[in-house]
Amino acid sequence: MSNIRVKGFNSITFWQEDSIGLIVIKSDRNGNIQTNTLNELMQSLAIAAADEKVKYIGLTGINSVFAKDIYFKPEESIKEALETMLSYSLFSSGVQKPIISLINGDAINIGFEIALLSDIIISSSKAKCGFAKDYTCLMGGSIARRRFFDPTLAKPSARINCDKVIEEIDFLGKAKEFILNDVRNNIYMERNAFRWDLKERIYEEQINFLKIHSEGRKTGDHEAH
Image 1: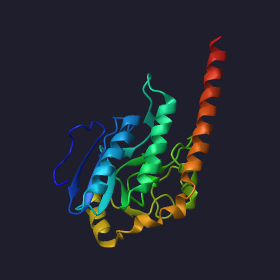
Image 2: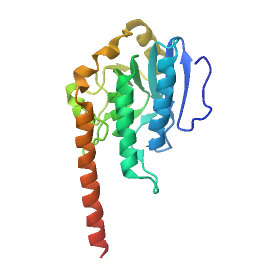
Image 3: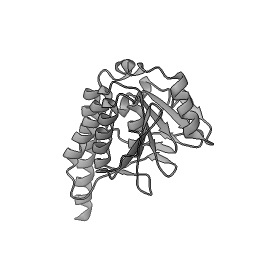
Image 4: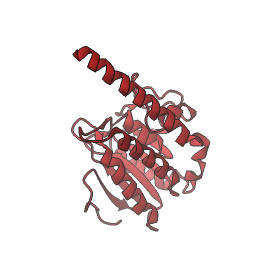
């Protein structure tokens, strides 16, 4: 992973810096991602996990945004999209290397859920992290309070909604230094302490989402008549 690898990918890009495999989420101008982003994240995680030169995997974003909400294409099956979310959550939980989220900018809703699936969340002091009050979790975010005191959308604060806060200036450089010097390379072994029932909780979240989605659609049909 010594060179930027973009062939075959549209929603992410990734490369290696020292022993860190850095994966960049390419959200749109509003900070939103598509379901395919999760598929490409799984592919890049698999490549990084198999690369012996990569000891740590970092996730970050572009344009001062980590990621916000997810955009469903009109022709996309909601059921298939939810299955992809479940697959990503379980796949990332099985990667046997430390995964560190580098919150270069706002990590909101689905973006924060992606970050929660990593072993450590390092946030820029200028970012915002967490869930909007009306957000319905889809990828295990409902267990966030096992790890953090208050996952409600706010400025980053260590142990409140992230693990470590770093000043915005040279954020990635300082985060890289912290990873190489302070993060244990077997920290991934502690994941089950927070997400031992991840699959069951995701099923609950997604059933609740489908119920709300169905009720909203019925309400819209009623109002249309």
